[in-house]
Length: 330
Image 1 (cartoon, one colour):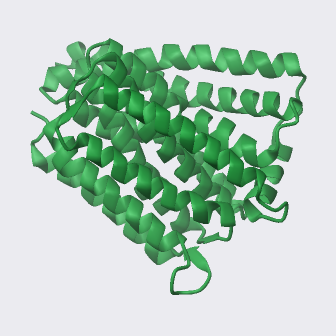
Image 2 (cartoon, helix red, strand yellow; image 1 turned 60 degrees about the horizontal axis):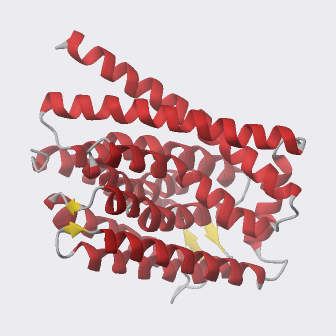
């Protein structure tokens, strides 16, 4: 058994490590290119960083669908959204309570709820069709247009813009040529790493008789969420709480609208039953909890406290235990 699994396990580990490193290079290079083009910090945060942090999931989704494992692709999207809230926000808030002050985020959070509910409606029939994929991409472009509009209209004093400017100032000042090389090089390595990781994950899943969907919900989802976790902890320690929440909201939007769209367009077919009946409701519950914690509503200034962070973290741990004991992977 060890010799049979050694190569796929090694491929999975190396692919995951390369995925994280290449994603960092891609994001840094893309942000530098955007800065050279005099794009505003908020637009860089919404489009460049939002797209960049979801690029691992997008590449994994495309390759998994092409390799005949669409369940892994959909599981990756749903699992990453759960991990972004339960693991990334939960662990970060445990270290540093997150105050949410940005008016931009207070508009984007309800948008995420709306997109999450809409995606659930597409899942109701238990299938993903090419029409569903087209609808998701149309919703993606409409959402991006709206988010760019509200970001352009945001005052310069908005905390999210100030935090984004501080974050961009910490990036290496690089010539445009180097920025493009980092962006393209990071993307190429990202694709190779994703290919290696998908191959290893699928081989391991087949060996143990585990479904592609559960591998996507666990190993792949947590792995592709590690860049968000590292960025979240770093930003929280700098006092950039709005940026932490903004990255999670943006990443989750991209996951639902682009990552799920890839298997729908490339390999339409039936969804894993567990995704519809177990994982989607849990993702919706986590998203509603984030909205409840991150918006002021009835309790004054919004703040994801350590207690709320512990609830999110405990919920994520309980979800992993549920997956382990559910046996729905077979």
